Amino acid sequence: MIELSPKDLEQLDSKGISKEKVENQIQTFKEGIPFVQLSQAAVVGNGILRFSEKEQLGLLQYFEDNRGNLDLLKFVPASGAASRMFKAMFNFLEAFDPSKEKLSEYLERTGDKDAQKFTENLPDFPFYDLIMSRIEGKASNKDEEAYLFVKEMLTESGLNYGFYPKGLLPFHKYSSGTATPFEEHLKEAALYAKTKGKANLHFTVSEQHDEMFAKEEALVGPKISKQTDTKFDVSYSNQKPSTDTIAVDMENKPFKNGDGSILFRPGGHGALIENLNDQDADIIFIKNIDNVVIDKNLETVSNSKKMLAGVLKKVQDKAFAYAKLLEESDVAVEKADEIKAFLEKDLNVRMPNNYDDLGVVEQKSVLKDRINRPIRICGMVKNEGEPGGGPFWIKDGEGNISLQIIESAQIDMGNKDQAAILQNSTHFNPVDLVCGVRNYKGDKFNLLDYVDPKQGFITGKTKEGKELKALELPGLWNGAMAFWNTIFVEVPLVTFNPVKTVNDLLKPTHQA
Image 1 (spheres, rainbow, N blue to C red):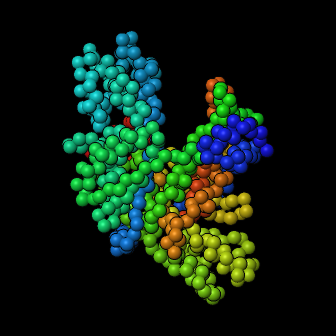
Image 2 (cartoon, rainbow, N blue to C red):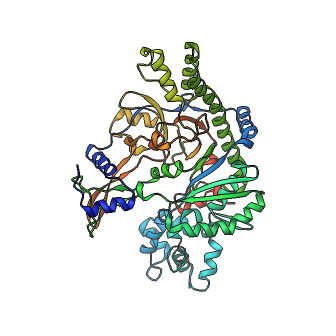
């Protein structure tokens, strides 16, 4: 048990965090989080489905035939600030002084590849014209111009992009003007998340950006609405304070701030399972804010999403029929075997090791448990060396095997066998998910029941010169969905265009 003062308890209360939750988190720090046990990499033919063009069209059509009766929602995690995207350029601003050296000398001296790429391609950035108009006549030479350009882009007295939410930066430049990721997500939603002329979107944003998003919606919403003949219903939420996690010192005692209060930190994107759990629809599309495409690739991306939704709808129709049967009647042995085969083959479910030794009633109860779960269809792209979670078969403490998206930080790289399995991985998940969160009766599952708390991360940090340990919750598409039924499907590479650094905007897929 931990000793908490009345002041501490008051702090917990104000955040909506129970004492029990804090005790569990401290226990997690004490025990540590074990690495996951990879069983094998999921590849095409073993855990990843690859459809022919004809099959893809069939699945797309299946979704189109059914979409009129479906509640659709697009869910976009958009809380990220752009500071990480501009990290290299903040460094450049600090390290380069045009009054003391030439840009070429600076680049030679530091080998700063990021700054070199950025400064050599200024006209190709979507915000080039805007910034040039703001610094016009202020620079006496090209080197100074490059410096002022970066300064205008990042600092508070300029455009302050370094502190913008990523979703509201100009990403693409068209003849008609620039477009933000927010605007591009509306265009996409009009293509695959629309029913009866209306598209629903939900963005999770940081509280300090609420007003900025509302402004952007008021600005671009009507324009895209008119272009796409779509009525947009956009809602927002913030990460809940109750999902913050406690930080501890090196002795696993609550880390105290200078004022004596306990240090809590945001729990990472896994906290958003709570925001997702507050949404309700037949099909929820999930896609990261910075993964958007230019207009010419919109149709390909939209077709890929509809195809994934077709996979979901098809498998869900069968699962619902079986779930209803299990609920309402005595299922003959042959039927139970048929349901088991469907779960194993179509939903990648692995039965407990002792399944065959169980009696008929217990077997039926296992089947009921396994079939009544949320379903996620995850797009997988061929791994071209980008960072991100990969698809694996993993084994839990009880020896149960399941299909999961695993980050490299969850893998014991010191173990040769585990590292070898990672090397065999061919695909990774670009956060491209289509989710079924209702049961066969149309009631929403409580998604918090399907989280694996053992899949979080413990990281070392410092505050005011003191070392501390921080806890990240199981990732939204990793441990937060660990007990969902999971299907992996190969999707085209063009569906994956993340912008992790500002120079990613120079890639052909972001040059309109």
